[in-house]
Image (cartoon, rainbow, N blue to C red; front, side):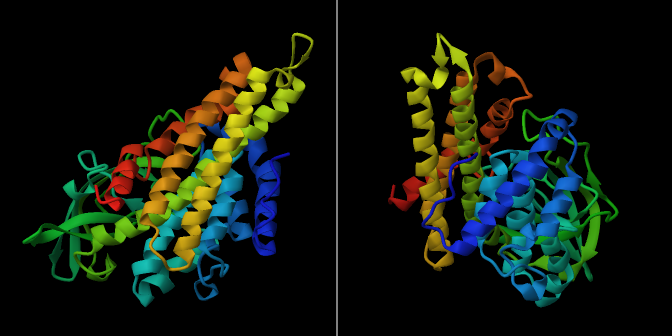
Length: 385
């Protein structure tokens, strides 16, 4: 069994975490290895999460949500990531990158059109920011959108876009240059529905990890969408998505904590069962101390994302704390995956064991939604450096 849910959490949060934990162990875990091996999207798992209301956790009931908050989403992500990071990132991207921009910056008409199906989990939205020449430096965006009468005409490309090519993907919100200002590029965000002529989804990537997560490159060739598909104020697209990324880093930190804790839990079980030199390997100080350090990393990272989430919910500045949480948790997940693989020895190199999948999956947690270097840059800036 995984470590106990922190007792200081209010009862409703504890109940949510326990419910998601049961779902993860009983529904997600039995099919994880197969989906990873086949690189197949887990539609049946997504349907189960949708039925539980997980995609609607932080949204008001008036838009089909559960009336919860962002911290509730984070708790769900942590529990799912203990057993399957691909499933967890599907939920994280669907909510914080797909639906949240609509909720934060959309018109009432856009919210009424898109949010009910997104919150219900019957549709997914995607977040088109990264380009071949614009990753961490998103200001180098080259995708363009120009107004032609009542329509935007979009041209360009995006890469590494999660949830962009599933059978239930409804749209991709893309950042695009819509003009020039005295400060440089005017970047806005445009909603491009799936199936729009000229919008092409490339075949899925062959990735190191997150093999059951849907990820594609996208291209836009004279893609026409209505002018009302502008999301938020014109020229505020870059600033708005920076806010979305700040929030998303808390969610990614929660996912990373789940991965780190999952490695601890699996290592503890294995160390109690595996025999070597006349006793279980957990009785050897070298193994016991390695697992103790793993637990320490997971607990420190958990406190970091709890703190960042608390500031977010209180309406206080949280950019620095989100960067710290993402930095600490991402490194904890990668370090714990490496150490857990070592505890498992040769078995840790076999994909049938979860620690092997965590070893492949966790590296992206130091890259996606802001690299380790970007987090360090943000923290340094917050210190006036």
